Length: 534
Image (cartoon, rainbow, N blue to C red):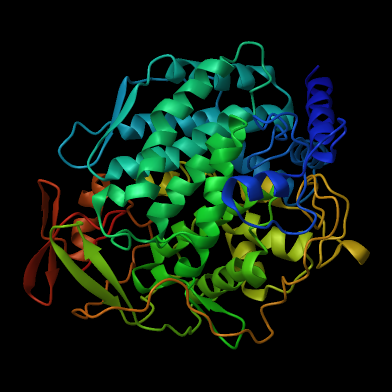
């Protein structure tokens, strides 16, 4: 029954992706109308109506073809899938006995009774059980996932707290949507109620952040803050068949004013084909978080026929290669970058990152399999640093396998199982000439023809380019590097674990008190996302 159901999903997805209905329009046309921009050639899908009902489902991080591949490979005992699945089944969140503990209000950040750990633990349990169901076929895991998701959609009404509430909305919004996407066809899943929760509780908080940045200067918040919000809005748009939301994220990725847009996150492309990741000047943990989140946005878009991976001559590839080399202990260049901080009409200042922060070679996040497999297997490109760091991280685990604090739950993980794929050969390599459908081929699901072959190997020269505004005047202070073997904290809730490691003085009343060379200063509003500096 499980296999029959999955084949039905795959067939529905294929029909949607290839435009089997008469009068189908391309995704490129829909996005261009909504956001006034051009799409990569061949990035097409069928849109069943003006409401965007033609999105492929499942179609967030995993397509129906992806799920079929995982199941077949694990059944055959193929490496490294089997090891990846063993990592999943060993995780305590992947057990069918998990009981949800839904809350009406979730709080994250100082000055509130924080309970967001309840949410992220339940979200990861729902995702892991749903993934385990698709791979092994045991319906008890689908039942568990559905029960968790239904319980939260029946009770959750708001996300509150300090600025960290934006992190909660972004991270857990995109994650819970991905969990639900895997069981959306189940008769016992409350689909309409879940859509309501996404569009009234999670997405509005993330949309507000992308628009107003918590009433702060747009560069006040580091790259990962924007990317969490973008991931949530994109996942909501796809899940709810909302083209306007999808278009908003695509436009922001390419042209947004904040530090999460691709040219601001990756401001300098070097002659060696590597591109500086802005947040490498902050610390390693958050740089890894940002790369993982940008990869998540790119993968979800790809599965709907939108090629952000290859945008701007594969700028993301060059940035990911840079972070991989740096995290492996390699020397990388870093151009000093000054960002303005503070509240609009209130306190203001600036901070300059002048060099790449120190790294801990033992620090990792489960982010590399997805990115490496896209560029080297789907696209057939050379990405030696991505290949090395992905191999080092194999088999990737998931939430609960990378430390007890919230940073260990920022990614859904299990990339070795979910994203390992066979390399495209022949006409499909490099320029994406393979068959469509998200099955390991070289072009987005639903793509009708090859997209531009500008995704060049990072070993070749590239023009130096900067995105956003030029560095402004201000004091020069360098953020501390993250040298903890555990994951970097991503919000106020992780303060205790980071006090000893980073020399934080205090956190009270929403103000972060920083100790820099023996002097204490105040920053308003918080730079957030674990923006703890010496």
